[in-house]
Structure formats: structure tokens, C-alpha cells
Image (spheres, rainbow, N blue to C red):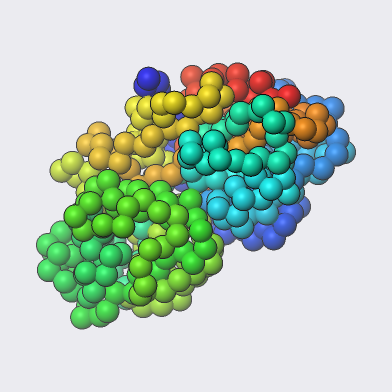
Length: 370
């Protein structure tokens, strides 16, 4: 089934990378206020502590959502530990946190295998595509501000078969660039990462011959430079000459980036491009009614689409062993998908707000949490 999922937004707002080590949202980012003259429809009457863990890509958005919800609920504390998607899912499965942020949904065989300690024995999962964002391919090459690259060249660079910046494959699509005789240093995530999973999924779907390692969350080959978390990759790329890496665009402001070939055009990363790429992508078959996992079309030729995109999910239980936790998760997820929440994330993180159609379906899933 295909539905229109995402409304396009304007330009991405620049925001510095924020470090959240355990607790999120002690200081509000700009743009979380309710518009003058409007009344907030956010959940109220919540108190207690809600703990989550997971994707670093979502941390700016989650800080925005947390600030909104805590402003409406003074006795509520939301903690989010951005240790990566893999760690977040593991923490959720163990019951150490009540929700996870993840740059991919749980695989169907993972759901079958379990366990999910915070969930009641007969519970399914609620997986909400709350955060949609491009993955920027960022680089630092002295004298070069912008590059146009096709999928085969990107795959070759990260697979280690294209090793120098003046390689003919790079020069072919950048005839006016002064490409140096300089070794390429690819930078990848050292931790298990949904961003890596989405990036390698793009590589494998667009050039399976050049990238033979599939869609994986742990970097599969040696060489290059490894860095912890999104901020680690960004800092490694900025700190070297000849470096190239991949990072959620919310943390890539002010860094040179690649425009990727889509059809006959080269498309730069943007919220609009991410929205276009995801807009017609289908829900994955064989899942529960409240598990809204989406299969991204990486090979789209839609004009303006940017297919190096991630959908980051908020993941919880349909039925919790702790009814109080269920109420808090329900309130936080509702805030995240609300118009206010999506607008705050778009302003602060450059994400693409979900469509009203997807919001309605997501809210139905959230309402099933008990």
C-alpha cells in the first residue's frame, strides 16, 4: 500500500551538534514555542520519569519534543541516551528503557525471537516513523567546496576501490573542480548504527556490483577511519584533509557535501529531497497493525528526490507490564508526531515533517498503547 507520507518543508535551519550524555533537553533549542495566539494540543497531566535510548540522528529532534512535553507537564522528566540505534534497541529489549529511537525498525525475525522485557507477554510492537532526514555525504578536501558523484563512484570510494581524489571516476562528474593528487580517507561509524544501515542500504541497492557487503549496521570492511557516533564522524571529517563520511544532515551544517546522481540530475541533501524520496515508499508487508515500518525506494528517479535518506523510528510496546510507563510513552510519541513536534524538529534538525495522512495512522497506533 502506498500513501502520501510527508509534507515538504522549507530550508534546513543550521544548528550545532548537541551532546546528550544520558539526559536530554536540559536546555531548549530555539523554535519550540507554540505559535502566538494558538493553543497547544499536547498531552497534559503527566508526571514521573520516562527513559529512552538510541539513535544519535534523532537527538536534536528528541530534545525539541522533550522540551515541548516537559513545558506542558512540569512534573515529567524525559531522559534520552543517544548511544546509537543498536544500543537503543538492545536497551529496549532488556527493559532498561521504556522506548527506543532507531534508524531502522526491528526486523521481523528479531521481533519473533524477542525478548522485549518491558512488554507484556502477548504484546506486539509500536514502531512510529517520527523522524525523516537526509544522510549527508560530507567531505573535506582543500580547495573543493562541492562534488557531484554517481552511486557507483560513491560505492567505490567507501568500498576502497577508488582511493585518490583525482581518480577519473570523480573527475568525470566534476570537470571544473581542482581535484588534488591526495589519498581518500573514508570515515565510517565505529559503533553499530542505523545511519550506517541506511547508508549501506543505499549503496547496496544502487550499486550492488561495487558494494558487495549488503545493508549492514556495523561497518563491514577494514581501512579508512572509524569514529564513534554521528558527532565523531563529523569531527573526523572536519579534522582531516581528504576525508569523506556520512552523517545525519542535522549535524552536517557548514560542511562541504556531495550531490548524488538521481536519474539525470545531481541532487543535494535537503528535507525536501528526503520527503520526495520517501513520499511514495510502501509500508513493509507482514507486520502488525501498529508496526509502521516503511521500505525506502533507494532507486527512485523522481525529480528532486534525495534517496540517501533515513527514517528513524520511535519504538515502544503495544502493551507494557507497567501501565504508568505506557501512559508516558503514549504522551511522548503523541508529542513527537504532533504538528508542533514535527515543526520544532524541522526547525531545529532540518527533518521533513510527516504528512497528515501518516500522522493519523501513527496516532491510531499510539492510541493502542496500554
